[in-house]
Length: 112
Image (cartoon, rainbow, N blue to C red; front, side, top):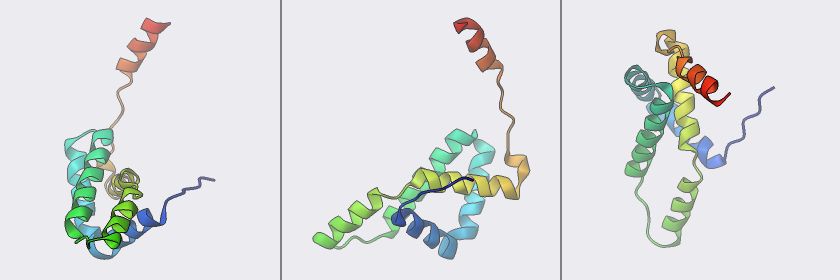
């Protein structure tokens, strides 16, 4: 059994995405996965999502603004990006690329 632990802040951003932006981000994830390897795509999705959240938010001044900033620092944007990539791959298996292990095999032979 796989347990996933995530902060309530991460859950909040995921719920906002599912409620307001789900279709758009599914399309974005598919587009990014077509252009980049999965590891790069997940990072780019995380970065794009983080920029979207920060741009969407109007931070109040004072303590409330500081609390918002602290809460946003606890959001795991990489985990959300990974979940977006996984959902896009599940919807369109052609987005899943085969991993080329030939480079790894050469590296293992050199170190052995």
